Image (cartoon, rainbow, N blue to C red):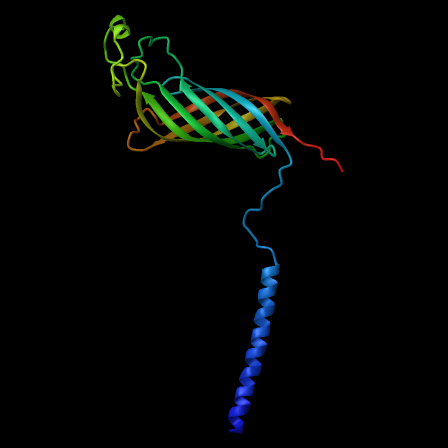
Length: 224
């Protein structure tokens, strides 16, 4: 009987010690801040710029226009639109490569934007839309055709929307800080197409030349 009482008392003391130690560890863990792989950075500067560029590659040249918001002069977010340019040898819209539009959200990382010459890494994600080819009629007959009701895309010159699909366009640019509010750049990119409606002409490699105009690193001075 005495042995049982002693054993029970020993177990109670051990359990009480273990509980106190565990409680102390829990308190320490809850009071400490959570550690993460990526630490958020404070917003110290921001900016806004307008971008214009030309893309040269298979399928003919494209003109790109975009707007970007700059954060800490290292990361920019925005949107852009790339459109195939009119070809002088294709007045009737019957070129072997159909006209193409790429409307996308953009993200661009510029690790060392304060250096005169630096690299940037743009990424565009959006929708690629091709124009359906015109039927092989003479130009004077095509211009006389009346728009047809419904989704008819072959006969209606005002609605030539062809296949559309997801596009992802990563690239790399070499930028030069020409002036405080003006940058020029040149580089290369590749447009990937994904989806059931993708066509061989949607995926393309291109070189690019462009200019950015705006405020890139506006720092707000706070009063003490």
